Length: 286
Ligand code: NAP
Image (cartoon, rainbow, N blue to C red; front, side, top):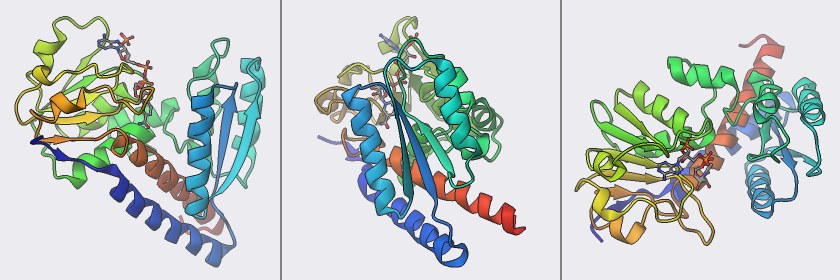
């Protein structure tokens, strides 16, 4: 193996520790504990595990959790009503709707029921527009976490060719927009892209967000490329063939321990941001 590992675990732990300090300061100064509400619809075991992980990490950061669990048969109207209640509840500072939701639900309508001031997972159109325009605002948690990891490893983005494989609204698309805001030259690839291996060979930075185990092969990569594997498939396997890619890349994220912890850390950091903003607007300190 020649590539250096871009490890998210330690950086994420630092971010969570800082968020915890800020949460404790809010509690001491204003008697307010930041609170993240999680909304889980249905009984998909993987989604339930992700929500539990987020709640456990919240606790470690001194962030309270509010858990809403709804049955698989929930309608869009019922889900929107639950999220609207959380949006209006002043004790809740951040709202996370676990993705994916059952197929009968209009996920966009549900995401848009989240008050943009509480959109700590960065899924609303408001947050999307902020990322596209380069405005301040909440980042989609996974792409935002990826950008922090690239910055921590001093990956030069200006003028670099970044190929983002995947264009989902929560991952691929916002990842490309954030890379563009850092002056990378961005190409999006997706299921209809032709000659994907050829295209990936032109990339200085590859973001794999496909949802297919071991999809990106070592011989697709330019020697020295920086490889970020956002994928998470059954058996702790990423979207990049790690053994092959780590022989060619200069930097690569492991799975697990790369992008995953950064996603949760950013979610918690943004929850504390939201709580601080709410407190400051109430106390006139904004
Ligand atoms: P998604 O909504 O299913 O999107 C997958 C994307 O991959 C789509 O844009 C699709 O293209 C593209 N794609 C599918 N097959 C392809 C192919 N053969 N060639 C090129 N592109 C192809 O998935 P997602 O929610 O973005 O998640 C992607 C991965 O990231 C999954 O492994 C997921 O578990 C992981 N993930 C990790 C985190 C984390 O915190 N680490 C968070 C979220 C997701 P089309 O648009 O053309 O269909």
